[in-house]
Length: 105
Image 1 (cartoon, rainbow, N blue to C red):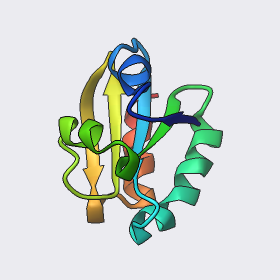
Image 2: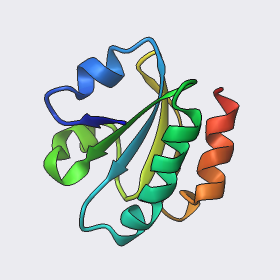
Image 3: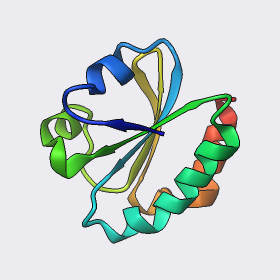
């Protein structure tokens, strides 16, 4: 899983021609921490078909605001640099995330 930050987000996500799953999280967000093991599991399960990356929004606030990340956790799918789908807060359950991932593989 790639670690994103304010320096590499544009290059790795917005300028990418691949399909990526991006986990927007914060260390202080309990639901984010609860979801993280599932995201890691999905990256191992589907990593040969999709790229996985994560961004700590507390260290990249401008990037998060620019991507209209208003609450956490957010799991987003980017295709050719465009956000095409996302799950926010209570909708970001392991089951919903896996269903979303399966649409893009």
